[in-house]
Image: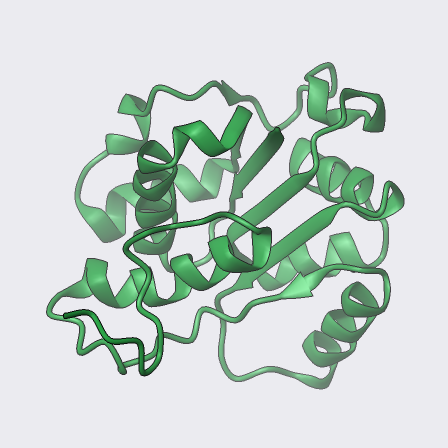
Length: 189
């Protein structure tokens, strides 16, 4: 059974994090444990972009960014999936270079060293050569770069549906079965 870490950084795109957490509420039978760590900036960006602080209401445990005594700070706890959503370029850089200076980067380092699933939903544009090289380093180390690039095949009607096109892709990459995911050319009738 899956043990999951969700990290939320201060990159723009809090809607992605909200849709991700909402999605995990719907697939609770597919994981045993789920822990969340948010950067200080993530909380401020969430409140600014979404105009609320609903992250406080999710029934999952939240851990402080400087607490290295949580289970997923060690490979022995056997957390097997980590999704960083949205992932700032600064966080991606620290992960790429093994700088474990907070719980987010330490947990990502654990995922890579243990050869477990690390998915970074990066949210920035355009990319500099430094960003591209960091993506290459993470990919070569076994991580997955999943840019927050929404698709329009499903004809999303609002921001949450648009964000879901990215979030559901990340859930697919993590191996979760999400029944409401849009599938290209799949007959829904």
